[in-house]
Image 1 (tube, helix red, strand yellow):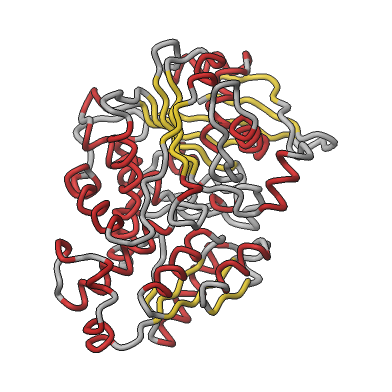
Image 2: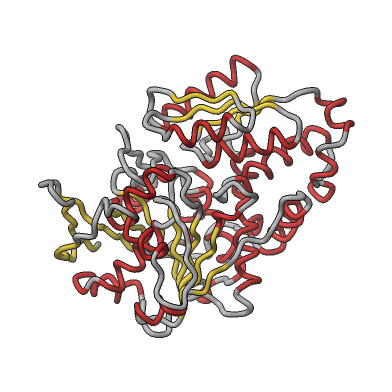
Length: 419
C-alpha cells in the first residue's frame, strides 16, 4: 500500500492519498451482461430517443505530452441528453426495462416509441418512480419519467446544492432535501416506496434488491460502447474510474473486462474521496465483507459521497480492478482546473467535482515526483494510453467557479510512504 499526504491550505488537517493493489486469481465473475454484445443493444435503446447524440471522446494530446504518456482520452458526458451528466443513461434504461418487464415485451422490443405508446399507459396506468440522489441520478430519473408520461419522487441528502434540487423539480419531480446522509436517504426512500407503492429506481444494490440496479448498470455501458468505437482500435492500457456506490465503475470495468479478457485487460484503477472511500476500505480489508463509511461523508465530490458499496459493482471490481485509491478533495479540484484550462491544442472540458476526479488523480500521479513509487506500481510510462470518463459538467455552477476561478482546494501534495 502507498500513502501520500496533502495538507489543505490554512488548516492543520492532514489528508492522504492512499492506494492498495488487489491481486487477482482465477477467471473472475461473469461480466457478459456488460460486454459489447449486450451494450450495443443498450446503445440502440438510447439511440431511439430523439435527444440522443453520441458524446465526444476528447483526445488530449497536449496533456499526454505534458504528462509523458502516449495518449489521454476523456469521454465528455456533460453533453449527455442536455442534462450535463451521464446518469440519465442508467435511469432511462432501468425505467424502460421495468416497463418492458411488466408488459412482457422483451429487451429487443425496447424503444422510446414503444414506451410512449398509449398502450403502455392503458395497461399499467400511471407509475411513480422514486429515488435518492445527490443530483445527477435523480435528474435522470425525473427526466425519463417526464418524457414517458410517468411520475417521479426524488429525495436528496443534506447539504445538496439548491441548484441541483431546482433542476430536478423543473422536470416535474416531487423533490426535497432530507436531513440525512446519502445512505440513510436511500433507506428512507425504500421505506417510503414500500408505504406508497412507488417503484424504487436506485443506482445501488444490496441483497434482495439487485434487478433494477443491474438494469441501471447496463444502461451505463452505452458510454463504454461509444468510447470503444471512438477509440478506433487504440486499446487503452489504463482505465481510471471514479466510484460512489460503484455502479458506473463496475459497469465500465465489466465492459472492458469482457472486451479484453485475461492479460489483455487494461489496468483498472478506482478512485474515491477519502471521506467516502468504501471500496478502498473493502479492498484493503480483503476479508470478504463490505466495509461502509458512516457520518456526513463531507466531500466536494458530491456524486461520489456514498458510504456503502453496490453489491453488484463490488463483485466486478473485486475480480477485475487492480488498484483502489482514496484521495483528498484537492486532487479532484486539480482535475477540474487541468480540464478547464487545457494545454495548448487540447479542447476544453468543463468537468465538475466528481467528473474530474479520475483525471485529477492521473495528473497528480504523473506530475508529483513524490508519487514516483505509485506511478511505477501503476505501470504508467511513455507507452501508456489512458481512458477516463468526465461523468458530469458544472452541475453545481457556484462551486465550480469557486474552485476553478477562485482557486479553492489548491494542490498541496507532500511526502510519500510505502506501506
